[in-house]
Image (tube, rainbow, N blue to C red; front, top):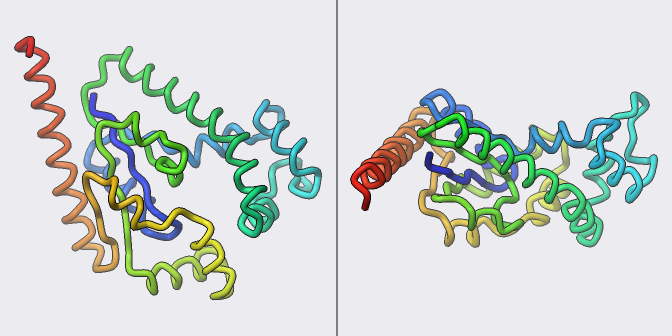
Length: 211
């Protein structure tokens, strides 16, 4: 199995890239979905978040109000760091549990860990390869405003709260730019996937020959 990290800044097109990788045959482990699952009522992670941030981040149905929580952490670096310290270890543990389960099943394909903060958390060091998704800053701003229903100022705050994408690009083995057409983006993803498949095959051959 080849373990690949997939990341990018908010509204960079990472989710689209992940869906195409899945279509091509990769097994996706989505850290954001895992975080959602871990923060459901009754879980230890949920209890830690509510204890730290109070009932103001709890929706009427008892779930975490992600919008309310987002407004807190995107405007306060210390609160953002606190949230990450509560959630990230649990997410990482679940990601690793799923990876070990794949290994136990004898999976030999491409396992992609889709995680927005994989570099910030240092988890990228545990990946065989790192793919970073980028897009034009002006396009990113427009996407954030449209997707999240935010003003330009609020959108800029969300973007600025994340690690500069250039720092992630410096660590990347592959960079996918989603600024162009869907066709152009797909061509890039397919090219990266072919290289990952080839690398996985080379590793299997090396292991089989005892190298």
